[in-house]
Image (cartoon, rainbow, N blue to C red; front, side, top):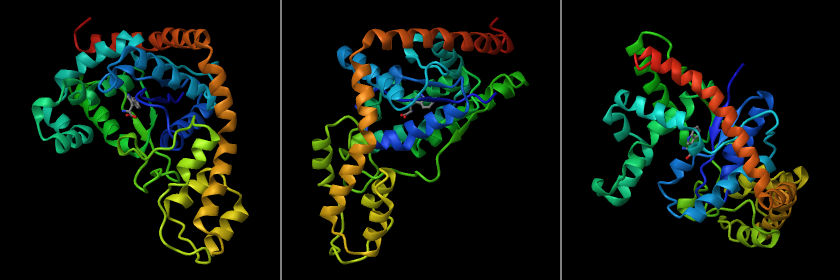
Amino acid sequence: MTRILSGVKPTGSPHLGNLFGMILPAIELTNANPGALLFIPDIHALNSVKDATKMRELSYEVAATLIACGFDVSKNITYRQSDIPEIFELSAILMPFTPKGLMNRAHAYKDRLAKDGNDDNVDMGLYTYPVLMAADILAFDTDIVPVGLDQKQHIEIARDIAERVNAATGKPTLKLPKESIKKDVGTIPGLDGRKMSKSYGNTIEIYSTPEETAKKLAKLATDSLTPADPKPDDSAIYNLMRLANVDKQFQMHYLSGGIGYGDAKKELANALNTYLSPMREKYNELINNKAYLDKVLSEGATKARAIATPILDRVKKDLGLL
Ligand code: TRP
């Protein structure tokens, strides 16, 4: 059996970058490998979300999103990270196997330092983020972690830490995970053409109304080609047209010339709204049924703990802690 595991952080309303870059490819993989774990790393989110009401709501949003996008909770497992004490125990065990230098090289920490300049302001949640993420993965003997390109380094760090544990025990105490990054998706462009990211303020949210979506797309950055000009196939707008399943004939007409950016954006908005409509409907139904989401999350936690407990015991035995 191949165990798939990934996490969707509850830090903001999910956008198309999350959807196409990670959520849909991950769900696709889980459908082919049932018994998969897609969880809500709420302690990771605590680095930026410090308001209780917001945290609770955002966690429900992730759970509802996964299910609305096709994650089958009758065959797979979803849970809040904070409900699984085994993860935090393993994280503590991994600390003495994690060199500071490894954390110093982590992208998120380096970006933060570059922005702020003051190392004293970096809290330990951010600094040790990769260790907790390694525990998330290693606590379940994970084989494959479907993630966006930005998370590749985190999986490498998890492998590095696991190898250090195994070198100490002289046994395959921890399973070495591999990342899965969907090649044909790559980086999802945002409204300004840069990578779609909350921190750039260039996102298109999944759950806006069709009108809001069209309004946002009208602002999508384009070049100054005229309607008659052939259009490049590597632009933000064309990448989104492909992802949103814009009619193939329209796409060809657009590329060969004869369609202006205004009309292309309208077509894109229509296609995207059609594409998202079943997810939006299902999501609205789920987000208004918190009792159901609570039940799914608590059943998920029970199943997840049943997997993690013997693995943690094995780690403890191999290290003389049991
Ligand atoms: N760091 C991931 C992100 O920002 C979220 C995450 C936390 C995760 N733990 C994980 C992803 C474990 C995969 C596996 O998107």
